[in-house]
Every structure is written in structure tokens, then in C-alpha cells.
Amino acid sequence: MGRIVGSPAIDVVIRELGAELLDDYLAFFDQDAFADNPGWSHCYCAFFHSDFPDDESSWSSEGRARNRAFKAQLIRSGKAPGLLAYFGNKVVGWCNAGPRAGYQNLRHRGEAVEDPTERVGSILCFIIARAYRGRGVATALLAAACEKFEREGFAVIEGYPTARFPELPDDLPMSARNYPGPLSMYLKAGFSVHREIGNWAVVRKRLGKC
Image (cartoon, rainbow, N blue to C red):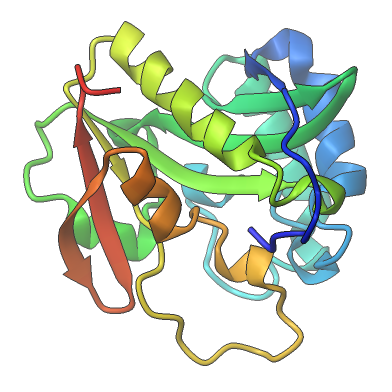
């Protein structure tokens, strides 16, 4: 996640996203989530929930207001599962984690679906504020996602980290390249590589092992 050398680990409080946290969520994405990667600031982590066209008008400044309003409505209606990490009263991280069947737009991750009837919890994105990367926030979010899915009765969790980085713009920060979460983090948390598809891996963990 773009480790900041010498930064100590911090204790964060993890809260499940709900309508009561909408203002906190929007403030994080308005201000901090993509402060060092403004080209992605228009998404609001709405991509995997939407059926919007996968073109520049949807995922650039032209689509920003629509994506923000769309994600806000999902949150109000309880259809945007995920976890926020707080340090004090400030949101410093986000993990998009919910039932795989609830995401309309898995894009290439749809190739990983071998059995659409299997009840799988999916972990799709980690967004950590720049000053808090390399301080254990994503690891804490991953652990909380495991616990959440286990409480909800899932047998399997799936993540989709990059296994081999394709050629990307030189100015794209490593935190952006690693937005699905680093493969090494999943492996340390007890996940194993289930399949490799192109440049990315499908990692899985059987619950009861969190």
C-alpha cells in the first residue's frame, strides 16, 4: 500500500458502513482517499456496484457527481457493504467487502466465478489515506472483513490481488496499483492462491480459519 518507512503501526477502530456513516464516507472520498491520485477520485468505490458504461465519461470528472450520488443512495439503502477504519474521529481507510453475488460489475473478476450458486464473500478494494499507509490499516481491515463474513455465515472469502503488474503510467502510485490489496497481505492472513487469471490472482480462505 505504499509503505511509509519508519511509520509506526497504529490502532484503528473498524466500523461497518451504514447510513449513519454516510457523511464520514463521503468526506473521506471527497478529501483524503485519492489525494495523491486525483485521476481516480471520481469513482467513490461505485464501480463494482454499477452498470455504468466502462468509458471515460463514467469514470472521470464527467461522472463524478453521478458516481457520488449513486454510491450515497446505495449506502442509504443498505446496499453498499464495507468497512471504514477510524483513527480517532478521522476515517483513514476503507475496504469494499460484501457478498460476491451483490456486485453487478465484477468486470474481469467475473472470470473467477466457477460456481455462481456458491456463497462467497468478496474483497474488492482497499483505500488508505496516504499518511496512514504502511501502518497496519489494511491488515486490520482484512482481519475485520474475515470476522464479518464469518459472522454472516459465509464459508469462503475471495480476494483479487494483482500477481504481476502490467505496464501502467509511471506517475501511478503503488497504492493505486495495489488497490485490491497486496498479494503478500492475503497470504500472511492465511489465504492461498486458488487460480491465476492474466495479471491477477484469485485468493481464497475457508472460514473457520480467520
